[in-house]
Length: 293
Image (cartoon, rainbow, N blue to C red; front, side):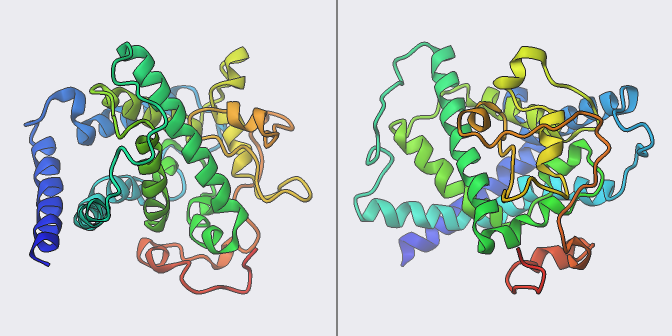
């Protein structure tokens, strides 16, 4: 028991101290996720202001500040809260003989750095694509994912408006993805982190981008807008599940882009009953509502 308490304490305090050091610029700039998030957010917001796709949309769009708070809550506050629990689970799994090498199917630590980062990026993105699909397919998971789909006007910060339970779903599967790589994360994994944040922000931004032929590889704002469409194709539980890469949707035939005017209704049937404020959304999903679909 002492070992578990120590693991919880170390995890909680370690994440708290790292976050505080990041705020005070006491960590290397290239691993400063706190200020990195702010810089990327400001850059994409400026692009929204200069090149708006939906010109009638306000710069401070509907729920702008709510989504801004979600960015810091999900990436930092909740990460601190849950970090101790993840450390406890790590100790428990190690005691059972399950460690980072248990599921390894690929050893790539000796590869060139660029190939390490590419494989790391692709595998983690596929895991997230698959998890995202599950969030739409199964009603229990969809109840939590509704928070993200309650966005009525798209903007960069909508990227990180999601229920805290999604952290619970994504983290273990992402960890398994790393274990498949022999438990190895490239030293420059921060490049993948910032690339994913940038692509995610752009996907939700009020900007019309398709990247031309690269649209079959990279997710983009036009494609992702239809993921948030109120009206879905008949018989579909969702479309365009890509996180950073669109390739998975084209490979598994979940792609859907009927047109590119950008003037579509966002949300989902029954979204009017979802709480509008953070604290209500924090607890949402633990009790079924009559609009569950």
